[in-house]
Structures are given as structure tokens and as C-alpha cells.
Length: 313
Image (tube, rainbow, N blue to C red; front, side, top):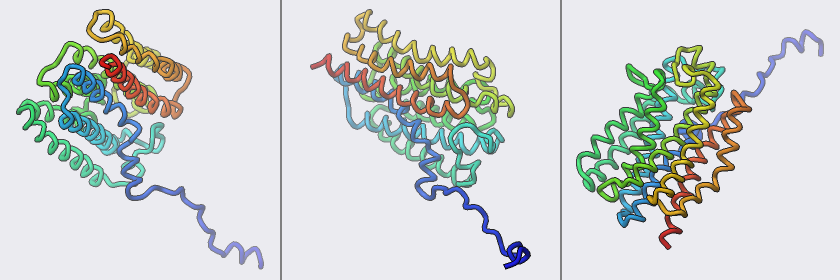
């Protein structure tokens, strides 16, 4: 066979990387590694409600599912609205975004947001029956904030308000709200423990923004990290991880919580490792730190709950 004949033969294109389909695409979209942190506040609240004799399995489970659905809806909204605003490009350092990658259309992802929020709202009607119309007010605020983080006329994340949103809804509202749904009131212990949970979940956003600081700056996304710079963002992360342990120590010394909740100290070495990685790593390396920080929030909460149970035995 001559060279001319060889040249005339069609050349097979290199195989394209295998892409997930169906359920796998939606699993990428909801970003399951971020979900453990969403459960943290309900875990802490339920442990405290059980200690105080107000544990109600129905509202506790409903609060947990709603927290997960709000996180999922926020993840999906971020995926589609960041793409529409041009914040996600092929040079993205974070995990794959399904809209930008063309795995799902904008309309499909927006429908996913609506389904997640509608399901959360349906469960909210049950909680309204249990605790009254104030549930709908709180739920509506949470739903609006979940979408408004990157969507709407004034996206919170683009104006440096992401940390405020996360702390309020995944800390204060999650812990105090889940406790109130079960007991009908909010104890001092519940208010205080909403601070560690809120800070640990905020740390996830801090490392996310640390990773994306240059890309966000380039597209005009004014996150806290963009505003304060790399070193200050690392300090922000450190505070968000260290202060939760100090709050637990303070509540124990004040006699508001039993000594056994100091079990959370078992997670301190893990916290030290994640903090160290924010000072020594950058770019895509921080994706693992983000996932580890999410797990840290849940482990911290589970150890706290274990301490409460041990103290009651």
C-alpha cells in the first residue's frame, strides 16, 4: 500500500473521555461530598433535643431531609447560574460543573433546582402542621437564599455575602431551627452550638473561594477571598476551624454542657491537617481539602452527639 493510499484512509479520532450518563450526571451535579456538612446542624440539634427530653423523630428526620435538599438545590443553582454569568470556564479548578461541561442543559438543571425546592417545601408543610406558620417564613427565607447565592439580580456570592448566608442558614437556622422544631423552644446550648457548626460549614466556602480566587477575580466575582486576598483567606479558614473547639470548651467550663462533649477534641488532628493543607496547597489540590472540611463538620457533630449520649447514660 502506497503512502498516498495511507493518506487517503480516514483517520479515526482519538477516543473521547467517557462521560457519565443518567444518574451519574445528576450525582456529579448535586456534589455529594458537600452533603455531610448540611447534616451537621441537625445532628447537633437532635442530640441536644434528646438530652432535654424534647426529641421528636418525625421533625428531626424532616429537618435533616430539608437541609440536604437545600444544599442540593444550592449546588444545582450554583452550577447553572455560574455558567450563565460566565464564571465557569474550561479552566475551572473545582470539580466538574455539568452545565458548563454540556452534560446537562440549563433548563434541565433549573428543573432539578425546582424539584429539590418543591420537595423541601412539601416536607415543610408537615413541619408547619407540627410547629406552626413560622416554619413557612423561615423556609421561604432559606429557599430564596439558596437560589440567590448565585442567582437573581443581586447574587450573594458575587458580592462577598456568601459567608454570611452560610453561617446564618447552615449554622444558626440549622441548629436552633431543628432544635425548635422538636422542642418548641431554643435553649442557650442550642444557640451556642450553632456557632461551631456554622463556622465549620463556612470553612468549606472559605477553602472553595481560596481555590478559585484568581478565576473569580478575573470574572468580577467579588467573594470575600477576592476582597481580602490569599493570606487573609487562609487566616479566615483557620479561625473557622479553631473557634468551634474553643466554643465547646467555653460551654463546658460555663457548666452549660457536660464534660463528655469534649469528645470533639478527637477530630482536632484532622482539623489541623485540613488547615495545614490550605497553607501548603493551591488550585485543584484544594478540592480534597474542601471534601475533607465537609467531613470534618460532620465528624465534629457526631462526636458532639456521642458525648451527649455518653453523658446521659
